[in-house]
Length: 453
Image 1 (cartoon, rainbow, N blue to C red):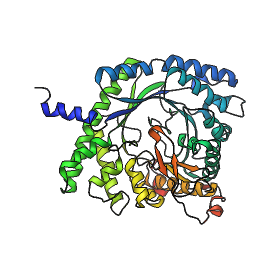
Image 2: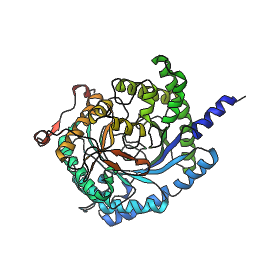
Image 3: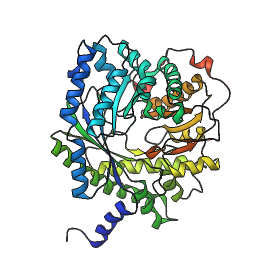
């Protein structure tokens, strides 16, 4: 017998009861051959290439979903950072590039496009500056385009000029979408050590070191992990770790199957499989509830960071056992607005911004989908980014900030973003200023352990 009745039932329960899904199949596409001295010609080439390469993506995803019975939530594309592609043109405003991408992916039925991005961990090119200055308007006039800026790395240190600039850009982006609680900022992330093959938005881009195209897959299943732990209440952490690892293995194998098949049908190489426990606002699809299943009365109390460290590590180990193509971020996401358990913990007061920062030292990414008061200064936002960049730089891991200063709202108010983005209470920030610190500019040098040549 190939599969036992228990294994068949277990697989069915993963999908039907515990919300296991392929969160995204993301087609990475190089746009380097689209660059030209004419911005108009570059945008025409971008449109033509997206239509040719990404045209079958949506139908391929639907076919696989129907044939295998595996939910695929989003079909996405990631592109070469537009700061690189547009630099050859004389354009000053890169918003038209975002508009071209947005209209093309909408025509194709693709959910999101990542790559309105700049890599400035060590300094700015003229193209980087132009792209960053274009972000607020570009994200306000498009629905599906996502933006990212890599401002730090373990090898290069922290570009504090970029950190300073991004605080102001985030404020302006929120103001451009003030009528929708600053939702433009939900499509903007600031990275340290950004991976070039991440399939998750808003940080996905097709890195300069990637090939012509590839198919990356993001798998999510926090409900499955929680359900697997429920029969083991009171047991030791060695047993809990083993359960998480084995469950992550099963989830990853499913993602590998879908990714390989999608890549074959699209005629592109299979890139990576990112097993990240990305929650949704639905009850039962929560990373916070996994932590509480381990014995915490509420996410955020003492012990939370240790529990999250175990969870993240075992997810990575189980994924690596199941596939040689594990990459991207892989681990556990802790967004606030997208996780019903996290929202509840914020409302109870056990999750604060400071506690979230501590948790980011062991999770997949960083401060994610956090609503803060609209009158928070740009310098304070930059200081929050700087702290998160430091955690990533020193620990040689990817960290990120996706934070939303909600115009007109204060701590304790509710911000609503809708859909998978959910909603969240506005969280308090420290009142004392960091202006003098941020205004110093320059670069925080890379740590000594970065020198490994």
